[in-house]
Image (cartoon, rainbow, N blue to C red):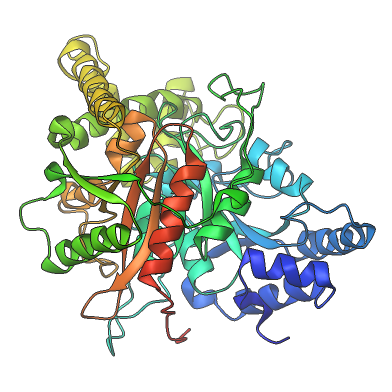
Length: 495
């Protein structure tokens, strides 16, 4: 079999079980693809020795006949996940040289299931960004191009390296994290599937924190079935994470029947934004028609507090970031600035943080510190928390009225060019999260499914939002949408 790196998880798993291919062959195919794809800057710490060692062990395990679904499958790990003995920098200069002595719970669960780690993937610094342009490693680049235009496009952010690697077939799947849309937006930009599970479904232990009440890990895969397979391995209760839910993890793959007859799908009127491109509007309508044709009932719904979601998010997330990032002070680990004669501890903190954090991280830390300060705590932070409660109640009311899932666009546009949204106006970049942040604020599961191409030949995604803890049902609705959309486009290889 040639081009083994182009397989999805389910196809590769079945080929491994039949003995048509070995994990070592799969892994070598991916490692070669990674070596040939430096132009994408997706893999930033390559671990070929670890990969081949794990692949050999997986082949033995498969021969023994007791291998779980993920056994022997080569994947990439976002640089936000701590991986024992392997650089884990969260794409930041301040964590230069940091090699943890422990493994994150999610990456450990994947390793225990026999998954093969190919290396660490590029991302926005501390997961703060929507375009993968804030990384200490430089920009991750999308494998897609606009027609015959050579301009480099963003793969989205913050999980840009994960998105680029999966879309370019450098790995069979990848881990991502989602604080305000960082799995779903990049997945939509590169034509792959990405699911953010319910808050608490995956352990956050060992994942470098951005905003602790919003962060959630999830898989980024080539299709919905693969997302179901990988998500099941990533989920589960973890005593080391106090926000981790003590709930049984269902067999998500077994729930993919494609039958959504009688399901109620809500279309929120508040997501019809001023200036929304006609192509996004058209795709959204077509998605609703596809679900209707599959037997679902389409109903109009209202989520009245949606318009306050972005401002609330951009108060809460920086506030939690400013608190979480206080630990990076040059004392215990990571980078420490060169000090001048006579400098004391205050100067060490100031210089280390000034040179260690990039501009976007500094901006968010300052905003967060400001909204948490004595005079502004009530005016900003507490008010944002109250708005968050109202947004959560909007969803609860809709689900209580019998709606099973909500269909929205995943992004307000197709992928834009790197450098097109400059630092001059960060708010323009923040608007990229307009359809995704509500899901994090309410702690709900959300999935992005590729559903079409725009007139320039770039992928567009649709988002489905599900009831809490009902990822299986959400994945099944996404599976029906995927089957109806029939999206098979791949980027032309230029790298």
